[in-house]
Image 1 (cartoon, rainbow, N blue to C red):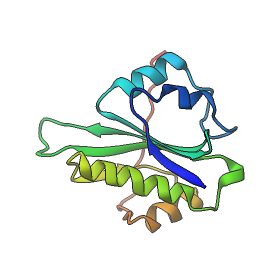
Image 2: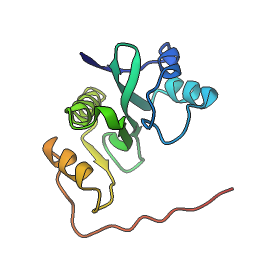
Image 3: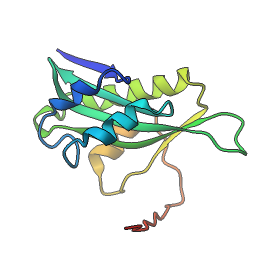
Image 4: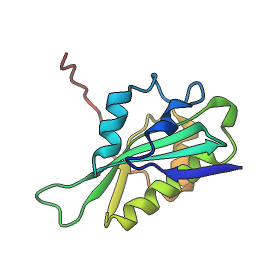
Length: 142
């Protein structure tokens, strides 16, 4: 049975047991600790026993000209052997509920149009595609 859990600052040890291909790279202990200690960051994981098989990370975004916070969903990942079981959808539903409880009025996420599984999952959790197409720029700082 898969458990969906919002991690808190005392849950760092759960990130010591992560299935292959869940995160892009290995967990960096100091970064994970900093992330979990930041009150604006959210990390929801899917656990199979004590093995992390999926996650969604997000940030509660506060801005000077916005009357309420928004949730920026940074990334979602599910181990290939656990895909197509509703885990991604359950993770999305959990992070959206967490955003509601935190007083967010909107949540947003970016994906590539060609990422059909992500597009379908976001739509299935109530996401609405926002036209026109956006362009993302990245800046290498180091």
